Length: 360
Ligand code: PMP
Image (tube, rainbow, N blue to C red; front, side, top):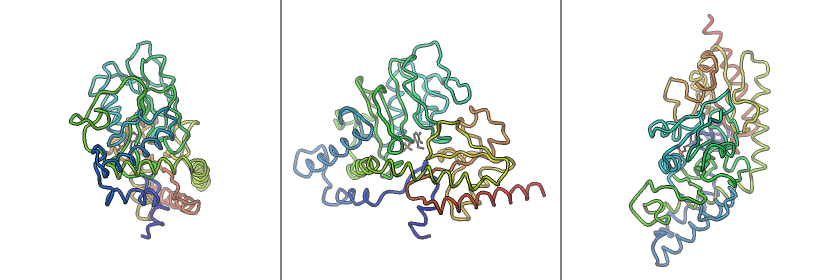
């Protein structure tokens, strides 16, 4: 398939996004002549260091951080989430968190907060650190992590599905995690924002990042992350308008289809659309749509190899027949209204065919 058509029919942007051409162009010199180690004091090192500094400022500015030094580069949100949870002893995370917080909290003996539908119940106990994501990766629900400041000395938020998509301001949050590849940057690089108290070091073995993370900096990836942040800041509004339109196209196209529902409540990011269809398997829909050239997901990409519903769908208390028929459509700036209309038509046809086959 032609590359631009592939991106146009790619509706799994919450799993990862294609790299923007402009990002790639900024990265390439640092894979060639700009190969210096950002921690060396000679000219090639200083050049790499300056490029990392620029990226750090661009990223700090995108999330409203007061100072670029509050951005610690990591390999991605998974590492940032692990690092922050390991930095405190009495922790609690929401039941909707990505597995890099949810599973880590369980393994480390942290608490999982309980919920009333989509509302987080605020317990009596006090924690050192509590974590609530700003946008959920499966159902798109938006929360305000500051609500947890009543129960914790420090508040962390996973901003992975929010940064570059909706306007984000980290004031009032102590720590935040996010990844470059969700905003058209390269994979394997992300950040941990911190304010005040420093998180504990997870990767030991060098003076890089002020001793907070050992290992030679991945300069080309960091440069790409910074370029992606700059572009996202410039294009956020236009992109938000486009994805809102794409979302309406898909929903309008389904209006004649029966027995389906949208999950996630009323305050939802337009980038993520979780739909459940009665009487079909989400996985079958993903496979059939893939045959028609569309990429969607049957849940979080990280758990889509499992046949079990994700912990997020489980805590939502959907009846099992709805949970089974759940798919996630996630929009991006390379999708077009035409491709959204085609996706919706294919989805409706596939759902109806599968239902006919099952009832025959
Ligand atoms: N948190 C959220 C909300 C995510 O959507 C993801 C990616 N699916 C991650 C964390 C992990 O990001 P990465 O795989 O880049 O470490």
